[in-house]
Amino acid sequence: MSVYVTSDLHGYPFAEFKKFLKKAGFSDNDFLYILGDVIDRNGDGGVEMLCRLLEQSNSQLILGNHEAMLLSCAFVFEKITNESLKNITSEKLAILNTYMRNGGDVTLNTLRELNKSSPETVSYILDYLRGAPLYETVCAGGKDFLLVHAGLGHFDRNKKLHCYSADDFLWTWPKLSDEYFDNIITVFGHTPTLSYGKEYTGKILKTRTWIDIDVGAAYGQKPALLRLDDLKEFYAD
Image (cartoon, helix red, strand yellow):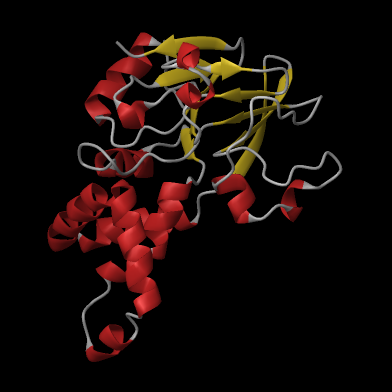
């Protein structure tokens, strides 16, 4: 079994992603971690991908900040009653507005349509996201890895992982000079690699202690896969 990771697909078509997995040699015996942000910005907003993840036993979504924003707006799928209308506060509307301005409109539109024909599927999706972990630790190819959406905010080598806040895992933008653990490679997305320089556009970025695999699919680049067993990189056509 090989372990693959990808991140920040942001509505990349599932059919194209399936072809990409096949190209990379991914099989039913392998395992795939998606390091958050399947949804928003493009296409159907990643809803088909989420539906497929519900059915897959050899994949795991790590919660991303976009999934967290969607969960904070789950009230839009509640049945409209006098009581539910009273609970829609100005704060909730502000959260919804922020989410939509960050590309959530396409995901909400797709989920609203799905909710008309299959509200139970929308409920399953939201429950799946609520159960998604903030991080995972895995061993592959004789190396240890920490998989997380955005890196580690307020990093301290002596701090236990359970002591970090959700925001530390979801919203961090590491600097190129930042270093994490010496004995475990931290793999994350969230920060498009092009943010570190034009030379990294569309490419996985590896440093001594961490690897950034957000190659900018949200902005028109093709997604990437990293096989942890040998750190081989794969790029979609």
